[in-house]
Amino acid sequence: MQDNFTASSPSSSSSASGVAEDNLAARRRRLKFRANHRGTFETDILIGGFVEANADTMTAEELTDMENILEMPDPELTDWLFGRLPLPEEKATPMLRRMVEDSRIRRGG
Image (cartoon, one colour):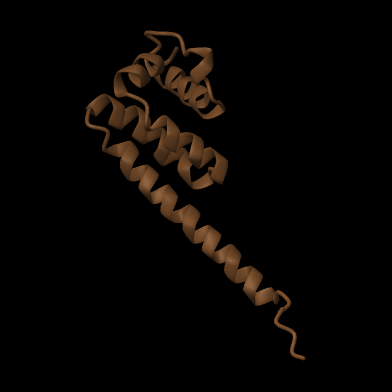
């Protein structure tokens, strides 16, 4: 009787990690595009600049967090990033906190 199970070879695991890296690279490219094409100059600069500077080192979880942030309305994001309104605790993910802090530093505040 022939065994239908095959052991995982090193090449198959490295192939799987290559696919995962390709997936992360594609997500990073999409994220950069979306962040730089928000529709308003201010958000393109603030959000796009942050993403351009950080996307290449973001983990899969951080990319997911950033993708979710990009689903938020621009007026809310700009109010938080410019410090016009405090960041609500229920929206304060680690990534959004980083963005707010980065924006504060860029503004010299």
